Image (cartoon, rainbow, N blue to C red; front, side):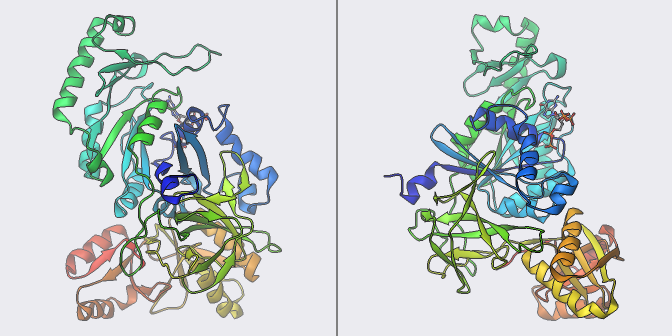
Length: 531
Ligand code: G4P
């Protein structure tokens, strides 16, 4: 085995993303993972990252104006001979389809739950995308330093709402003011929690034998007794950890801690390094044997495009996930439809900087600057014969009618909307009856990006208006006749997506379930897989 062997290098890599609801602690955890992994030295660097980038680059106008990060970046660091790639999934206002797409480039995910709140709506949505691709999930229950829900209730919620078997790796002793630490269930070792004094340097606490005498230093005899009993109940009542079940996406190992107090983060990172899967073989469009990472030929796919808003610089950066081979700077890669591109200046994303990547291996993500040649979902390989299964489309959660201010520019508008939908900025739905296009997005920011780009690149002023619809579902059926009959009878609520596929436009989420119930032979999909 040597350092340039793609199989050897792939086996060292762990590429993952964090899924969570806003405010559960993703940013804090990211920062502390980077600290634990030695990638950054000072707390505050992750938040400061956006700041530094804004002053350094003219990435995107909106990004600067609003002071938010539109770009999901990649943070790479080494931990115990593993190379960890953390793909940032934009949340809050910059939640968008890119957040979902990023998950398709990850081999595993860490689900962060706020211990007081449990599973929240956005966790659930992101979880569904993981499930779609059988992405294994490690769970981190955060904010134990605050008053938390009962851990049994939290684990039951995971089991019931996600249909995912929770396997606690640790068991917490109390929460909030009474939080004392966690018991490592396999090692029967207690990891004590100590609130650091102001200015005190953080030190990773050493585990202590739970049965030994020194436990009395950390727990009163009542606390020790309670922990012994609850941990025993957890051992007996909860699923034991199984690597296979985790890797297949049926079971989630659960860790507890406090990202803010840096407690449990190093243990989570160890768990990730030991349990999370190395880069997986990737499925091909149209079936056939998946492409394994050890294959010599370089291949990969584009999961996200970031555009520069400056109209004078129509450059884009395509985020490219390497799936096989050893990529080297200067290589020529081809899309599955034969377009060749010479990759001179691929970018690598480090915790705080962007750098030129000299080489990359399966599991890595590099940025490919281009002038709009690459699209979301494009496969690239040396031979140009590899086409991976595409990135799915996700049902939009916000729909708006789109009009151009100058009525003579209708045709231009169509071209602009189609072009930007092809690039994956937003989705476009054309009602079969009626003229105005309906734009769909999963995050409000996508409309701002669309508006800016339509103006900058096509010179059009557009207006977004409330749409009569609130939900869109791709309709399909085993029987073509059934589908045609449904489309015909629901004509005034049918639109076509960019590929001409029929979409049912509903006035409310309730209407979707109502119509679905009335039409059992029709599937109402909230994801469109691209083959
Ligand atoms: P997000 O990226 O998932 O949206 O969450 P973020 O890390 O920004 O955390 C949201 C809030 O929760 C922050 O507080 C953060 O400090 C706090 N937090 C995160 N982890 C923990 C934890 O383990 N314990 C406690 N007690 N709080 C935690 P904020 O007041 O909104 O922001 P800030 O002023 O602290 O930056």
